[in-house]
Length: 307
Image 1: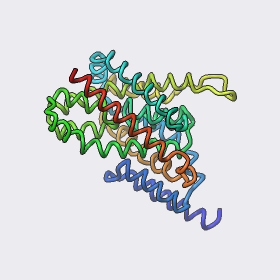
Image 2: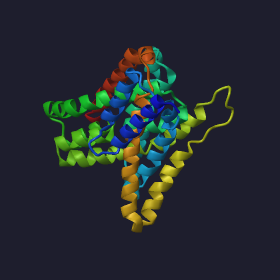
Image 3: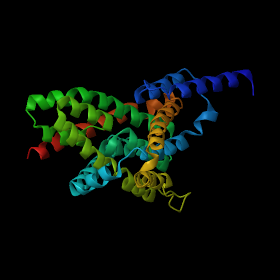
């Protein structure tokens, strides 16, 4: 191993360590990786672990979920959520064809919009075997729209005089990431926060059936059999185990924290493996798809909630 490679690997180790610090956000992790990539600083040895880090992180985050809340959330609004998720996914796929966006990017953006933003993208991407630049573009679109939603939604809610209940449901349906849903709900009011968090939890559970559907449909000529997303099964088992054996709760909180920090590492690795050429491939059209799907989802869901 030459000196340059050692220095590069050393830099990556330092930055991966930084991803475990509490002030590092998903946007910071992904953005740092993209900056390194644009500067031509890439580590081939690190990138081969990206998918595995994503999968392990998702499983570990399962230890932080409350089974009682999951079951309660599943019982309420199941049909409405199923219809909503299906319609958003279908609309996203149609818009992807209209804007001529790559299939994988289309599926990732649609899943992120329909379910829970970056978490859905992280869960679906290993199943699709999507490339790093495809994952990165989907995540960038979601993060940008998340930031806008956090500022715009409470303002629009106040201007339209939406009730706490209506706003909570609207935020959960039309804002991508759970963190932004919680932020917007908290800004609007306590009841809006409770409703938004609960409804978003219901939607987050759809990562599991969607992952299985994507695995079934993601066949090609070189792979006849279905590659079952085993990490999703382990994610469910982690939720069950943590709630059946509550005596180890201090350890579960550590596992959940490790999963969230691991997600930062995965985002950093994804961002650091894109290229300018790949970015030019689908950049503008990806944003056109993401913005169009987001606006359609926000407007139509608000209309249905006020119908």
